[in-house]
Length: 426
Image (cartoon, rainbow, N blue to C red; front, side):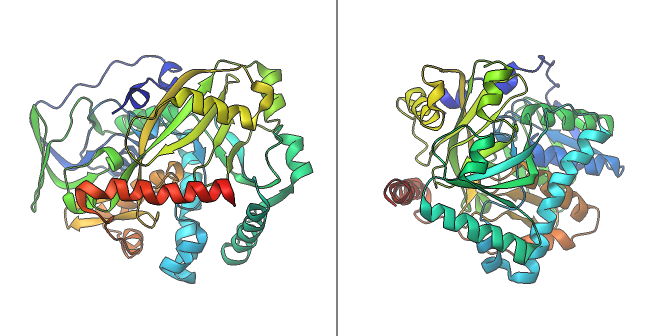
């Protein structure tokens, strides 16, 4: 992992240091063993522990060390594939059902932060913004699709209305979603972990799972212990590779980067984004940004599909920020970090079972904050005997990335270069 991915996120620097949970030692037993203490694993742990099951979560590093504690914090309905592709993959009736369930993922975050007093800096509103006339047309088509096929209202803001809330000259209009929003993802992950432990789940940090022993009673092996389970949940996503090769071939780790300025002060921050909403543009290699509770600008983008270190990352990210907000020229990032997200080939969620005792969720494709919370609940439902929703997700078709282990990343990088060129030229 390159230095930018290793860099400490502002999220971690903004919360009090917590003592680590002890690693797994020796033999242990659980009804359910969960690999990964991110949103998916912690969501499942909370649901299962509340149902009375013995739950053990094994985390290689610390809670939220992966994408769950490093992402842009934008909380959206739907999935990474988008609604048009969801219709093509699932058909009208099933797509509507899956979309409605994605909205439940947002409601679940609200319910949990209230029930467990999780102070995670929630703020309402998200705008998807257009830089070019064709993107205006695409957004208007998307708005109609959401209204007509999914009964989900999104407001169209022409340029003048958008500029009243967003002080950037780049955008020609935007689709504003009042039901979406943003949060401090690490604070939310830590709150979920506390809630799961209060419900009876056990959490072991520094417990990387080295091997999954499959069978009617699967066993999770770490360097210092073994966990025997009735059921296993694989929730490592982009960082959980090597435990189930058939899953590894269906996702690709993609690097994404976020920077945080120093605090700008309340007035200067509000002059950038007056209503506090999160924003993302329509480009394939998109920019996304929002304000933090302490009035920083958090600015993300610059996806890396090659898994190679990004040269001049700070300068590139700074120029992108200045293009959006010329009034910030001269402002630099106080923090700059990266992480890996897991994309599926069709960008649709890949959730299901490998056998009767091993469950998984992956393929969030950069659209995972709400969806991963829902995934944990759906997996827990299946383990508790109500598998209808998991079976619906498992019916979505998925294929391996082409090229095998050696060529799949270069092939994807080449394909993404075409889309970036399309963003620039058309």
